[in-house]
Image (cartoon, rainbow, N blue to C red; front, side, top):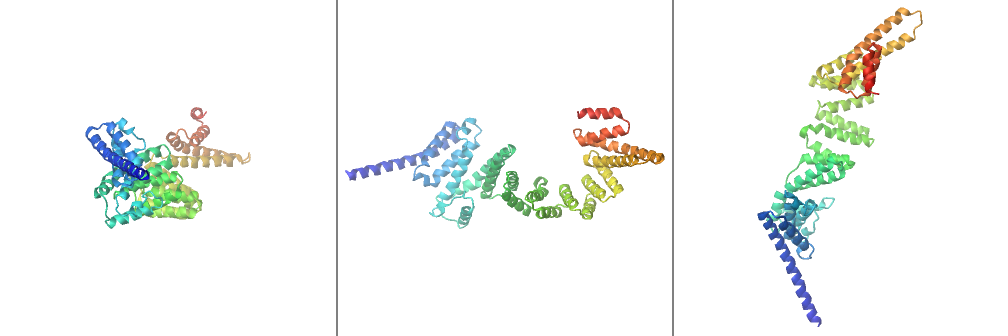
Length: 422
């Protein structure tokens, strides 16, 4: 009796294997039928058949099983039919997973079949590429060529779009993962997509994975990445990360490196300037700005920056000249207009304060100070008006303008501005 049981078991096992083989073939045929007809039911039937095959001990170890599965899910992703796309919401992940499995199971070498291309430390990925260079025996060379040459570039684009969507929704961790997969698949397809690499770095930084962000930014700096003028921002991002970590020396180092790479970049100049000013290095800041202005004499930001340095060095006339030059280049430059207005306003206020300290017998000096103060206030008005017009909701410029109109006797104008902030 035992003998017949064993034979029966063998027959049953063979039948299951044959059934699973049929499902792999059926999945292939369903996919071909879909390519001809575009009917989503063919695609759904193919997915059902192949997902049954990947559960069986024998067919789940075949490269073709996973390759066919990848092709089915690839067609779901590529389809513009909502019904087809609804077959599986996780088609992108399942497609990628299937192709990665197909690539390793395609090797004839049993050890290479064990590789995990999604291993976090990347060691198996390195072994995979090393193996490819030695041209190992595979079940079907077409699988590798098709997956890496045709399918991965398409999937990389899908992951990039997914990352952009998640980034827009402030899902920075999700964006980092999607951009990372896009970058990986692009590299496996023989392309280094530096724009996606930059997006991965941004998502890593915003998602507070600072170590990953630093590695990516450094790599991009090494490659001199500057698509859409983003090169200077690499240095600023690195500086910002180190500054947040409390490493001011390293933060300053990256701004210095950035200034050497992009000597005329306004943002880097201003950040370097801030560092000089915070440390009281006004002369260094002045030397920096003189060189920058020589290189770019039509840059309003540079004149404004030098004006602030001169103001700190108490060289008021030079500061005024630079602020006015900044406004000449950029008439709606809020900061230059505000600083000029504030300079004259403060000068007038100082004269008023000085006059209030005089004795009653110093009438002549009192009148002279009041007249000079009024002249300062009148000089301030047009500049503060520019600042207020540029940023009408800014309370700083608005309140200063109210005081100036009051000091110059333009009470109706003062009342009008005051009404905006009540």
